[in-house]
Image 1 (cartoon, rainbow, N blue to C red):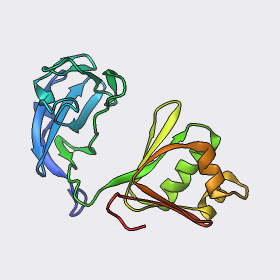
Image 2: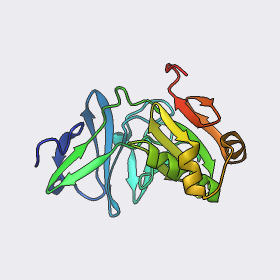
Image 3: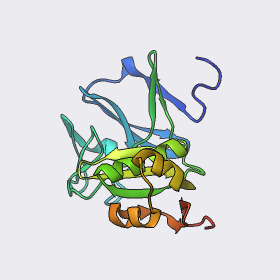
Length: 203
């Protein structure tokens, strides 16, 4: 491994020692992480159920369906989305496999996630693409009817980048009013840029 390739990542085990259909709880950077391997791949999520904080590694895995041992909450481990209830969702952690080594980045210090939730139309995709081009470490989660943009604070969207992706002159406030259904963090809208910051961040 080249020096610096896995900065922020922690080695958690070997893929050859992880069976398909297995769940495992690991501790990474003071964070409890659920690792689960299915025929679709290996995934890393928050270690506790969002309902009552019960360890999800104690749950029952049937294919892609993980059922919490305490109150029966169910999750699709291929994407982290809730099955029952459907509005629940597991936080996903970045994971890399290098050779036989499994690396996970669960260090959330200084990584407050902010950003908009957008209607998944042409304008929503353009806004998400402009944000991804302008900021680093942006994740765009495509949920079918909507897009969730998650980025470290602060997350910026300039009129220049949006006009570049929409190929026309735009009014930032108007485009967001039509396309953004909600957002995480605090928002400041100016004529030339929009900034999302964590709750504690200055606007």
